Length: 299
Image (cartoon, rainbow, N blue to C red; front, side, top):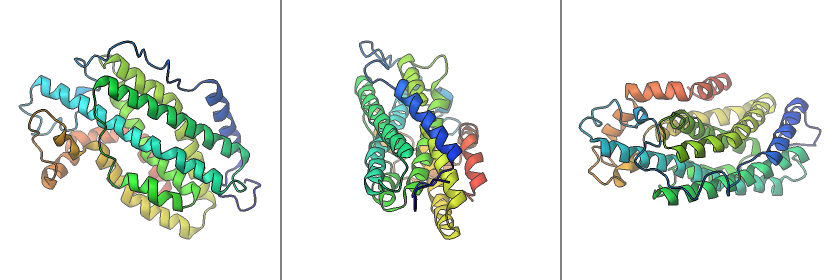
């Protein structure tokens, strides 16, 4: 394991070697805000930015009777929510990770410190790019995700770094897999498809790093610490999946009267548990579910 005394990010030499390779790739190929998209071109709002079969209320009675124009509007609003989730998440990671380096500079290896810095730099670029895309597309940034934003800004900074990396991974991985699963079809609006694809190249490295750190934590942490993290995970993961599956805030964004009020808990629950959304989640989150089940992170 790491040779640092009382390391806060214990990791095997083999995994640390892989982290060094992530850094090398990032130094040579990472998202460039200026060139990632043809900013001088228009975003075509007449095309779907996601697979229309993946509309949150598709397959439920609430989708029946909506016009084609209303469904297209929903698709853009839902994409705005997805991008908003990335913005809120990726704004919180640099202060969290740089805080770890500042607080534990003598207990985190130089290789891991370097990648935490790279990770933070890339998240800042992603945030700038997503905000520019939102403005260009005429989309509003949604409210911070309830509970998750507090977790990232208040709870995790007080916990050990490996736990912060784990929960950052879970949130980012769900958002990333969900966005990629719905946005890469040939009929999807080209700039939207490109945005998510280019973002994915950096995120795939971030996810790999998070997995290696988390797996090392579960191999080295005390039974008491692991039990605490599992208890947190079993509360947070279902809420995270529900939040991604359907966000009630959409009712406050539509130009027409949305069929589900923001506070109608029964209808919201019905959409969350719809057979169509269950199928979607099983497909897009299969890799995540397999990993968290291996670690015992959900009930």
